[in-house]
Amino acid sequence: MVAIYKSDVVIVGAGLAGLTAAREIAKANKSVVVLSKLHPLRSHSGAAQGGINAALSDDDDVELHIFDTIKGSDYLADQDAVELMCQNAPKSVRWIERMGAVFSRREDGRIAQRPFGGQSRPRACFAKDRTGLTLLQTIYEQCVREKVLIFDE
Ligand SMILES: Cc1cc2nc3c(=O)[nH]c(=O)nc-3n(C[C@H](O)[C@H](O)[C@H](O)COP(=O)(O)OP(=O)(O)OC[C@H]3O[C@@H](n4cnc5c(N)ncnc54)[C@H](O)[C@@H]3O)c2cc1C
Image (cartoon, rainbow, N blue to C red):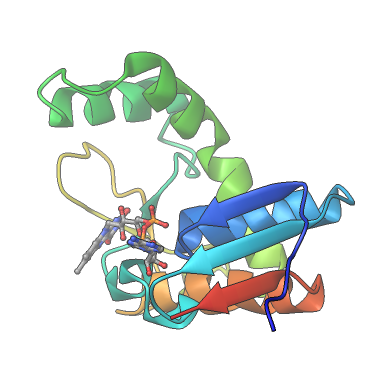
């Protein structure tokens, strides 16, 4: 027997990008289905170790993050997309932290940040050496919570 599913949105890929989109769509009360070649937790996102850049500290600013990112791309990046990403980075880090992602901390309790490729400030927020896996598990849990339908493998 063939099952036919109907959904407002179909997402192909269950890495950090796909699952984040799926979670937000479900939160907006739209039905969403995710199709993935692998189980979500085996997506490449889980391999990222270094961290996620965000201009959080007092001696950093978003303009500098934008500049570093565009320069680091040899000026090939879509500059409007970089601007949007960098502007939203602090909000995104706090967003996923509040959903349960445990970032490594400084002595004073703030999120720790370390130097990362091409960045002129230590701005990579990390969870020891398994940042990607931590973020992926967090967003996957949230998708399960929102009852997102995931067809893997
Ligand atoms: C080893 C490693 C280390 C990294 N370190 C960092 C880091 O420290 N900091 C950083 O910012 N970035 C890092 N990156 C880059 C970052 O992890 C990726 O850019 C990001 O995770 C990509 O997320 P994504 O959701 O777009 O893709 P992915 O996580 O790759 O997800 C793709 C999804 O698509 C699915 N898929 C693929 N093909 C098909 C198909 N034909 N049909 C259905 N589904 C399909 C896969 O199963 C998977 O679920 C690293 C990447 C790697 C590999």
